[in-house]
Image: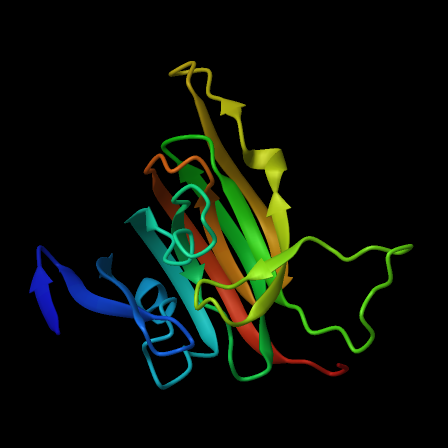
Length: 190
């Protein structure tokens, strides 16, 4: 179901576990394709070239309850690619509170790492099925701003990965304004 309010579309997204059982419904506000596609509800892939400028409010990560952790708050800036391509680009952002930025990579090693070498930080994507390796950009997590003297997160960086999220693990909602210029590219080597 989709309606329009104040220039934003509202999409009711139903999150289902891989077993097909219902997890929970949620309403996601978006002004572009990006947050709605994060819920794996769209049958088609996002566009290959995106230039986005948006302000988004976070929502609870659907897999937090399944993982029995705090209800992480997230904003999906670029959804996980399902077509084998990766996002490459630049993002500049500012958030209302200290947050993390996560560049995520599909994680399917050809050889399972042994105990001696260890595995990179990895988890399940918000669809609760796809494995991802996470690259949290913690250097932006707590930047005091001279004008307000308040800790926030702000920054700009070049990235390459399967998805891009703004994230807060303590369950406290946040707002983030961001500009992204990105292209989806095929992998030349797997």
